[in-house]
Image 1 (cartoon, rainbow, N blue to C red):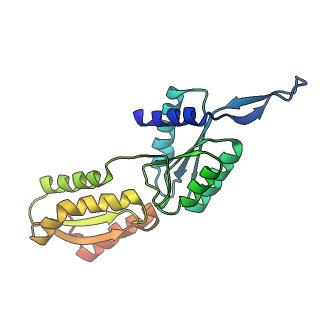
Image 2: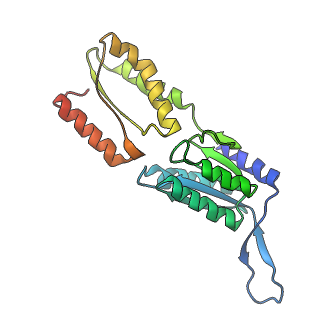
Image 3: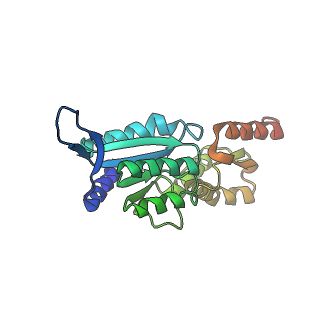
Length: 227
C-alpha cells in the first residue's frame, strides 16, 4: 500500500482545501467545513468486477490509513467521456488530486488537461496516460507480468501443447505490455514447434463477454483441442 503515500505528498504540495459541506443553519455565520479531497476514477464493472470488489475498498482503506480526514470520491465509468465528466464534477467540488485508471491510453488526455486547468494533480493508476503530463504513474511491471504468465506455461505444459491467447484490448497500455511480455517468452516455442499458437484474439473493450466469445471461438476452431 506504500504507493498511495504519493497522494499524501501531492496533497501537501497542492496545499489543497475544498468546500464540501455547509455547517448546520444554527449559526448566523456562513462557515463551511473544509476538507482535502481526492477523486478515484475507475473503469466500471462492464470492464471488470475487480474495480468495485477489490480496487475501490483497497484504495479507501489505504487513504483511511494515510489520513482519515481526506474525503475520497470513488466513481467508475464505462468510457473515456464518462471518466472526464466524473473528473470535472470532482474538480468542481474542489478535488486537488485525481487518481484515474484510464479506459484507453490516449483517451484520458482531456481529463489531464481539465485537471491541469484547475491546478490539480493527476495520478495514473494501473494504466498509463500517454502524451499527457501526468504527475505520477502507479502500476506493476506489466511486461514482466506477461512474461511470468507465459513462463508458467513453458514450465508446466508438455511439448506439442496448443495454446489460445485471449488478450486485453490493445488501446490499454497495460494490456499491450502483457501481450508483448507473453509473446517475448512464447514466440520462440511457437517458432520451433514446441507449442502451437492455436488461436489469438484481442478483446474489444476489455469486456468479459467478448473474452468469452473468443474462448468459444478458439474451442470451436480447434475441435476443443486447447491445452
